[in-house]
Amino acid sequence: MPRKNSIFGALIQIVTMQNNFISVSDLSKEDILSLLKDAAKFEANPNQRLLEGKVVATLFFEPSTRTRLSFETAANRLGARVIGFSDPNATSTSKGETLKDTIKMVSNYADVIVMRHYLEGAARYASEVTDVPIINAGDGANQHPSQTMLDLYSIWKTQGTLENIDITMVGDLKYGRTVHSLVQALSFFHPKFHFIAPDLLRMPLGYRDFCVRHNLEYDEQERFDEEAINRTDILYMTRIQRERFSDLREYEQVKNVYCLHKAMLDNAKPNLRVLHPLPRVNEIAYDVDESEKAYYFQQAQNGLYTREAIICRMLNIQL
Ligand code: CP
Image 1 (cartoon, rainbow, N blue to C red):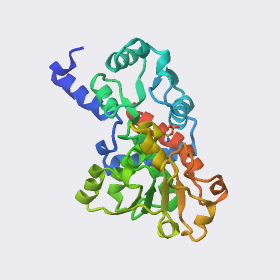
Image 2: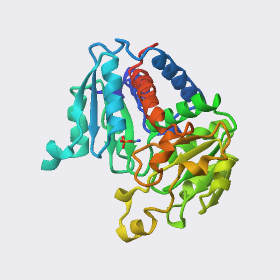
Image 3: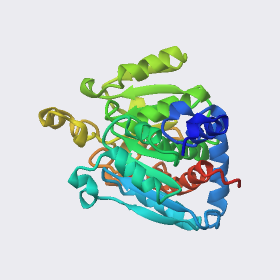
């Protein structure tokens, strides 16, 4: 359909472009707050037949537990049907079909596409080859915007506000896409950041520059200790992303660099909560699970409500 050749077509194109969920940098403060409000409505009532007759495709070119299953649960609880794959080797990708052709094919079948891909920029590229809304479920080490929505929702629920949060991000700040998206999203809310990482895994320069440009307070250190924990509201632990290292000797150097134990939380602020996008490997000891400050499993549950909100927003479904 020659959409770009008419004013009507151009308008449709603009609307369609706005209906992608690719990067936090595409969102305004109002977008974020209104999605969080919708998520709260879905938490109160997760089962609503708002997507009857719709088809949601989940294309996962990289492994996932939470993101894929929570998107699929969100679609199911809203009455949509789900198609897709979690193993690209079982698709024609393994015969050499390109991402462009895969997206164009799936666009023939689905009303919205949720995609995780190992290449940075893959979701943006997908959105440029189809008019079907694309939701980025993680692109390489770049962005994980739907994770950010559930992170924000978790912060809001546990702290009662998103404003003036003191947040400490610990671990793999170089390859961890969730921290990249979260820094951008919190920039609307006057945060104070502490970045704790080994030198090899520092927060990338682009995000440190982002903080400077937006007058966001941040500091960096390598040491992870109780002093760092006791000053903060949110302790955001991350996994060292083995799959992103090109030199596994470097991974071996840093793989067990930090581990949070329950005793380290003894003198933390009463409102402190431990978040982690999960999966964890060694960075949170199992005894932390017994602490009232551990919030990572509820955080993952919040993914259901925020992803219900995101899918509905992409399909222009009014709540
Ligand atoms: N947090 C997250 O993205 O988890 P999965 O890799 O299991 O989807």
